[in-house]
Image (cartoon, rainbow, N blue to C red; front, side, top):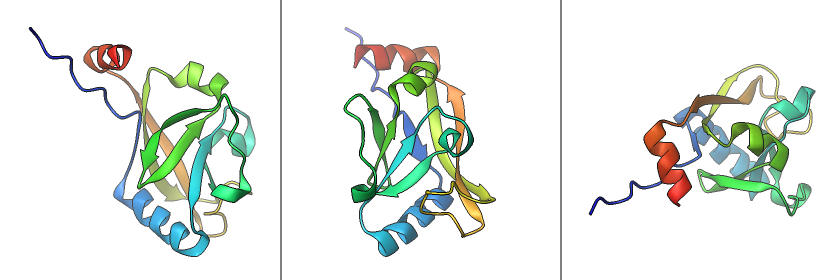
Length: 125
């Protein structure tokens, strides 16, 4: 009998992102990420204090990065459900309401399509 492969994580973070997450946690306490499918700031991953953003009942929790929950709007998840996400940090300005704003760096998503094996493991999970 063949063992079912372990389902891959849907979202992971680079060391640079984890460093910035720790900095933001030290300054703001518990935080969360939300990725919506809107335009402008809504197309970037946004970081909020947990008490400052209300996660919708239908929002999809993709996982956690550095112990921080990462959510996505259901409509965006429909587009990205076959995609592995890596949270990174790049030079630039963060979203207006995102906690990294004003640091001359911003969170950024890099993505790739799940392999066939990873997709089967996700379907089986």
